[in-house]
Length: 629
Image 1 (cartoon, one colour):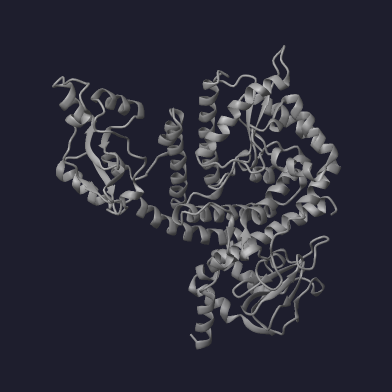
Image 2 (spheres, helix red, strand yellow):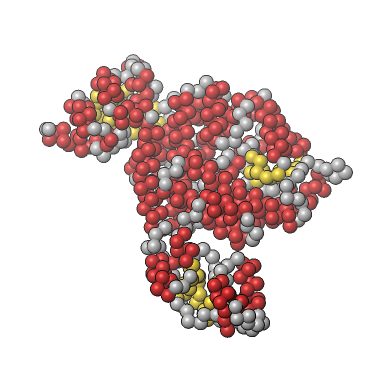
């Protein structure tokens, strides 16, 4: 092999899809390639040249491509390709001219392969063919494997005996003063559902511990008086470990002394308690256990623990390679269970009935679309029927206090109150079925900016609890009304197109404040907005973005391959958000947000994110063409 070929093979081995091709096929391609130079501003390909005749891979420099986006600004009308990227795949596969003008953005060198050899290579190399026909899906597979390896390692660290005790403590220790009666200590253990009670002094220094096995041996069998101080029957010789001690150290202490619990003490103060069960569970919380814990929860503390378990489950699923679509559905499903349990407890406490007869709690926004990540505030509403002899105002007056308590409890469980007050405790969003129809109709007819904003939130509603038929009736009514109002849909499309994907001319991305990208606003929202409009136009009643795209595409005659590209891009951005939320909240212990610095991404993820934004541009192009914008 010549030195030139060796150098070229080394270059291709650093870029997808060439890094997965068999060496013989890669060498075959390199031997048939030539190297071309293009000066800055020089045209490389254009539609006027006829059918594409060569496959190009950028070796050095950058290529700018002008896109056919209707009424787009100059900045929006360009994409940028850099080292390792190839083009024009669509034109070569379809045996047609390119749809864009490609120019050198700087002095640029490209490897070029004739179209005839490109077609032969498609038949020879399965990885190359798969990449060319499913480019973004193929890149996603690369990224997914890297993510899985990363999270499998971190998950294994989290769930092994090398974990620090601070990572295993699941709740604050249940304590009492040493002079508490034995009877009261046992009552507290029963009420809080714990297997141990620790006596502490005024500075939270542990003095003694009583466990369930001690109850039989030291209280029941000797039949001692229950009014005496609990410290008299406690184990006073305590073994403690610091929070930095590792789980295996606690396991050794338990094995050596036959203990079931180890006290975790820092600066002489009790900070936690680790049980034998905790050590061997090590946060491997199963789906069934989480669901069961939520359904049987009786206190806010139990619900908060379940919310933490849901976040832990999400991390473990990422380690197992669960895809973004399934992962967000799991998160939404368990958050649904949590919300329903909170509603049940509150309605029972307020004598509103456990079944929710005549009323329905609605999930809105990302929860309404089954697309919740780890960073989500509350978006919810109430719909009800008005009993005979009552008014809507009177019914609302009865429901609002309970709705307010539900919103507050959800906030305690990690779902912040909506800053825009889009919650069931707001009288504006606690309405009868007829009031909701009137409100929706007003938005559709008037189409004011505020109405379009509300439509983007409320039209994604989904029944969560109570009389589901109310939500179903409202959904079918909305589908009929919106489907027949082309002006409203056009205005929604016009509003959606104001949020352009942040692709730049002189650099990969157009960055916002502090050089950040908002993955929700800039990445997810273009797909969500387009899917909502497509579904309203075609009568699709599903609320999921992916299902809306898939189902409406048939009625709109959009090719399946085109929709697959949109969905793959949408799911990649969702997975990037999930990773960012975990790294921000769990690893860095910072407030959750959707802002990322693309410079911190690895080369592969930056490349996929660029492609995902191009797909967002394509879905907006389709939206613009449908409504002639």
